[in-house]
Structure formats: structure tokens, C-alpha cells
Length: 132
Image (tube, one colour):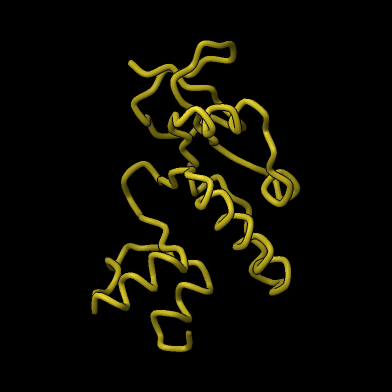
């Protein structure tokens, strides 16, 4: 079984890894982040794993939200896009898929729509609604 460094809280569903806190690890699982952690994410161990081409999974239900503050919600969406651009793999354990703006543009170009259970960033939603 894959040995994964756990960042934050352990996801409540099994992701098929064994959690460890000491190297060596083959991957990382980010189970939860606070608002500040997401906005300023720079965890050295995770960055090293990404630079080595090893998988880093982010459990999306563990992400903070700020639905009542548009500016903060936009900053959080931007931080999520940055992590995605770095190669972090977003997962909810198989239930929903996060659609980023880049993926939304590709879906739109190919005439496809995301699945009903997809979770979209605000910009991805705008792109798919034709406001890009």
C-alpha cells in the first residue's frame, strides 16, 4: 500500500493509502486546510513531492469556504487553481470532481458538459455559461 504524508485532518473515507508522518513517503494527502493555510500554501514536504513528480491528493470536502464574502471566495478559488496548476490532484474520494477554469474551457471547446455531480470553481461556471 502507498505510504502517504498526511497534512491536516484524516479524510473520513478511505483513500487507499497508509498515513505516515516520517519519510519515506510515496505521496501526500491534504485532508484539510484552514483559510490561511489554503491562501498561503507552501508546505515544504508537499512541494518536494510535487517537484519529484510524486502524487499529492487534496481531499476537497476539507477545503474552507467563504460563500458570504465574494472577494475572499475569489481568492480561495485562485489558491485552488494554483494548487491544481502545480499538479495537486483534487478528490472527494470518488464522489465529485472539481472542474477548474482550464478544464471548463476544454469542455466548452469540445462541446461537452461536466457531470451532474461536478463541483465547479466560480470562473469555471462562468466559462461554461458562456461569459468567458
